[in-house]
Structure formats: structure tokens, C-alpha cells
Image (cartoon, rainbow, N blue to C red):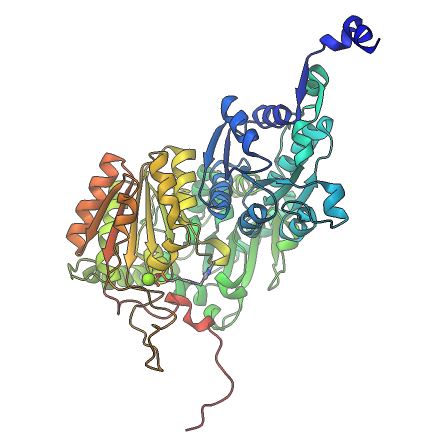
Length: 577
Ligand SMILES: Cc1ncc(C[n+]2csc(CCOP(=O)(O)OP(=O)(O)O)c2C)c(N)n1
Ligand SMILES: [Mg+2]
């Protein structure tokens, strides 16, 4: 009887869709065409189907690297980078990257499969049981779970809008295994999808705020502009350049703000950092926060002279976070900077020459002092010899993307390698996190199509080193230079007990990281002098072949914690003699 009913029921002919396809269609509808992840239950088939439907699905060796890739894809494109993981352990591996994205204000969506809700909630011991939504919540901007196929469109729309609107950040999207297989009418499914319109609407600053800020800037005798990575993210490059140049104010780029204007620009105060922080009287922050990286806007770094701060940021709560902001300008960076530029009029007075000349002189002195160090051809290399070579290579190839992590390797490369274009330098970010390296390389190559040069401490590289296989598998134009000084900060520490274990900061001596790349068909080079390093990097950048150069550094080169040794706690207890 039921068979007969079904055969005459037009519903039996209806076209159906399922959770798998609705998620894929929702991603594509919103222009999210790349997924970074690691397969496994319950998302293996989803990855296959996504690939079949034209999404680029990049499989990693560890979710954390995939997550970092997604986070920097978000920074580079202003669209949320998507990371896809399995439940509990895969989710947790991806979670560090989600928290990193949130901290750094990069839009990213972590999509994790999850186990059966009924079993998880009764804690009955399901396969990879974990209440992932609850765990993700404090580490991201927003977290959502979709239980029904008809809600997939809305769920993804909420995730996208949360990731990119206002201050961008990480969003978690929990997709229980059962959702993927749920079936519904295809037409109704199609109608349930949402194309997010104006996901990150412009936020126009109040005219009063703009006027107030310009009045403060005008009153300055020794003004300074600080460009943060928020300014780089905004992709308002022309407006920022025009504003800075019209103002005539010296500017200091934060690490990932480098290249918005070239580091060689006459107004760049990068090499006079300590002078401008101490001596300035009005400081205008553009997409930069007064966190630890700027010594919270107070203390020795900032000198004794009174200071006034102007701040442009999309997040109103950023104002007065550490010190009083006398002129807050709240809005998106592009709108704010454009409004400032328009309100400046045609008679804007550049700051007095005694200030701008003093900054330039300090900067030129520091650059000149450094120059001879960068030209040494010592073997084994020191940081300056090796970085002098890489500095020239980036100068000759300003479109290349520079990935950088480590301690000395990071701090010295940041200071030495000039950047010429926006969003070309990507690094450890707000947390000073190790492990972003290979994930960043992969996403940078995939999202921009440009060659990538990674400058990696040997310790830093180890956090994501297995992803060199991923780089080879996708044949990406990535050249990794490992600054091999046999350890963390230095390779010279000794175990004070005289026991067999080496000191906690020391690695295997004479390690050959280049062999790792060769193991997967890439090019490996062992470079012992700046000349060799230069040849090898240029060859890699010309060929576009995955390359890893083991740069042999003097194990004694480098200092504790690079430039931030002062952050190591010291015991208040004086050692008794
Ligand atoms: C996830 C994470 N774990 C640990 C650290 C602590 N840490 C800071 S720098 C660093 C490695 C520094 O050594 P290396 O990368 O070899 O750079 P070098 O100073 O030797 O050039 C470590 C482990 C960190 N920043 N992030
Ligand atoms: Mg090292």
C-alpha cells in the first residue's frame, strides 16, 4: 500500500539536497572558495565533495598550521579564512589558531565536525566526545552550532558577518556529524542560503571626532603617526599614504604595518624608534593598539615629556585601554583616514623642520651604523651577515611576501629587512607566537600567487616543519630559510649538572633541515656563508620551486629572547653568596 502511495506521490520525484551540499553551496555563494584543513570523521566526504564542487581544499599535516593559514588568508583578503577540522582533538588543534586570529583581529571561521549531541550532552562517551561550542566561545568573537539542514545558510551568514564586521576576529561554527547527511527539498534548500550583503559595512567617523583629532595634531610640535597591522588590513593604502604625506608627520610602522609606505620613505622613523617614542608630544595611532608591543603607552619607553594620543580604531572600547586618548576617532580605517584627509584643507602646515630633521638625522645615523655589519661575509654566519643578504633580495623583489618567526631571527629581521609594499610582511603577531611559519607560507602563496620567502629561527621552524610536505605537495613557490644556530636564542647553553641531557634551549648540533625538504622532492641547500645564502635564495625565488635553505649560523650569535629579554621574570630573592 505504502509503495503504491509513494509511486503516485509527486513528492517522491522531488529533487533533494543534503547538508554536505548546502554547506558547500553556502560557502561558494559567499565567495569562500578555499578550505584549509585536515580530513577525518565526520568531514572526510565533505572535503571530497567540496573539491568536486570546485572549492580548493588544501590538506595539511596538522590542524594548527591549517588554522594559521586560514587566519592569515583572512588578513590578506579581508574575507574570512576557512579552517576545517574533525571533532575533539582536531578541533582543539585548530583552536589555538582561532584564538590567534581573534587576538590579532583577523577574520577566520573554524568549522569543526562534532559528535552526537545527545551523547555528548549526557557525557556517555561518544567517539571524540567534547562540548566544542562551549570550549570555543571564550576564545573567539562568536560561536554558532547548526542542527538542521535548513539553517545552514543562516548559520554561515552569521559566521561570516561576525568574522568580518566591526573589529574582525575568529568565529567558530560547530557542525554535528548528523547535519551533513540530513536531506531536504533542493529548492527549499537553495532558498535557505544567504548571500551576505555588505558584510563589513563602512563605519563613518563622527565629523566632530575628526575635527578634534586634527586640532590636536595641528597643535603638536613633535607629532608622530604609528601604523599598525589594522591599517594594513584595511586595504586603504592610497588614503593612508596620502594622509601621511600630506601631514608631513614622521611615521613608525608596527611589524605588519611595514610597507604601507616604504621603510625607505623620507618620513619613516622606523630606525629612530626609541627617539620618536620618547620625544614626540602628539601620537596618532592608526590601526595600532597600545598593548605590550608599544609598552602600553607609558613608562620609560615613552620618556618623561607629556603626550597626547589620537587613536583611529574601529573598536570604541579600544580607546583609553591603557592611557587617556584625547581624540578618539572611531570608524573603519579607510573612512576615518579619508575623512581626516578631506578635513585637512589645502593649507596644512607640516611639522617644524627641527623635529623632522632631528628624526631623519637619528634614523640616518642608525642606518649608517648598521650598514657595515650587514656586509660581512662571515662563516659561520651571524644574523647581520645573513640578513644583509635577505634585505637586498627583498629590495630587488618587493612583491615577495616575507614570513618571519623566531626570537633573534624575528627581531633582527624586522629591523633590518626594509619592506616596500603593504601586507608583504606577515609574522608572529600580537602574541609573538611560534608555529605560524609554514601555514602562513602556504596561505600567502595560495591567496596572492606571489613568491614567499620565510625567515625562520630553527626553533620556530620546528613548530610547523612537517608542512614542508604540504608545500611540496602543492608545489608552492616558497623558499624557507632556517637560521640554524643550534637552538632557542643560542646553541651554547650547557647543562649545569654536567649530566647527559643538553640544556633546555639547545638542539642537535649541525642539524640539516634542508634534508627535510629533499625528503619530499623539494630543493634543499646547506648555506654556510652570506654569499652561498644569496645564491641559493635567488635561485629559489627565480625557479619558484619549494626550497629549504639551512643557513648555518654561529651558535653563539643571538641573545636571550631576542629584543624582549626584559620580559623574563626575575626573582625578587637576592642570591645569597
Ligand atoms: C607557541 C610558542 N611557544 C613558545 C614560545 C617561546 N619562544 C619564543 S621565541 C622561541 C624560539 C626562539 O628560537 P629560534 O626560533 O631558533 O630563534 P633564534 O632566537 O634562535 O634566532 C620560543 C620557543 C612562543 N613564543 N610561542
Ligand atoms: Mg635558533
